[in-house]
Image 1 (tube, rainbow, N blue to C red):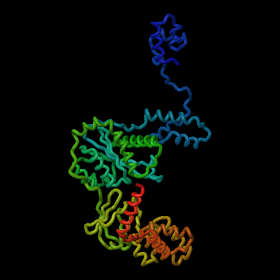
Image 2 (image 1 turned 30 degrees about the vertical axis):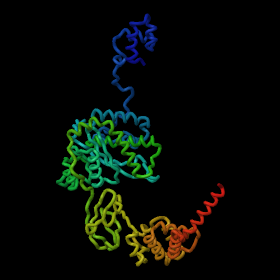
Image 3 (image 1 turned 60 degrees about the vertical axis):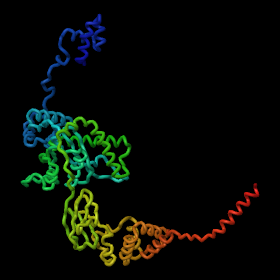
Length: 497
């Protein structure tokens, strides 16, 4: 097939070469073809006729009106679905290869007679005007911490004019994660834009039935920084297009960097966080010029950050537990029945009583979960060992695998006394420390000795005795002994001389 480029070269060579044979050879075409294109001024693309007729009979002509009606009622119907339906109605009439014909016909109908498609309108961005915020899941990157899957999200903030971006590791789309992500971005940037746009996050945006667009806490955050909030329409993600696109590109950059690194496993969360920050520095390096334009119009930061926590007043139950944001946590039994205040942060919860912080708990992710610390309730369980058998959170009272092995061994030795004996061992871990108890357990299990709380305690005491620093007694020395020693040395020296 002769191209337009070949014909242009042919006409250029005609002015230089002596014969048409040489011209045709150098242009890469037959001599007869060369003569054809030298006689006309048109190019091959201009000579090609428009094909506007069917080369085969339309197999779906009889039923096309029905198909068109189906598509008008349900525009989302696929060609294969329609084809399978008619094959079921009239078995043997159509062959499998005719599916592609129907799909082309449906595609043509949608382009010429189908419903109008959604149009995306490019927007003009101005320096310092708008920042967009979103959460994105990072599970697809398959990052692990010490060989364990690290299931997490990142909150992502982007300035729409310069594309400067900031991310923050989080584990849920909570208000605390939203607040931390936005404030970290602002303080890293050193300024704030005039407006911030999010999607319909439940942490920031009320449902449509509420007269107020944003939640009280989110309005307080916006007011603290003096910025205006915006939200996109529900289910219309492209209205937050800049941050959506940056989500994709950021994760792609991380994926490529992980490939170069040769491993997706990290020793700690801090190492992984440093890895992300390093990538962000590289991405933001080429945006400095536009970012400088943004700084000229952005607002300055307030004097301090806004506290990113939720305050909850709760009363400790008789079971020495509290219910915080649909999850259950244990607290020390001495607080039973007392009114306490919980400050819920992104990843931890501080408990306050009488204006003093009394404990810090890890915040659970999700709902209907529980965090029970045996140290909070072990003193009560030792006094009431019968409660252990059917305790609702009994599985939480095995600090590690060794304690589970101990309990199973005690059950094998004597089921009647197993609960009571195990609680004594657990109480020893509370008093003496888990490491000492585990060391004693390993020793008993290794020599296959009879297991009991008394034996564990004996081993702990023996280990402490063996590891005690021995006392060194220094006897008093007479100074006359030094005189005799020196006189002996001086006599030796005189003899040599």
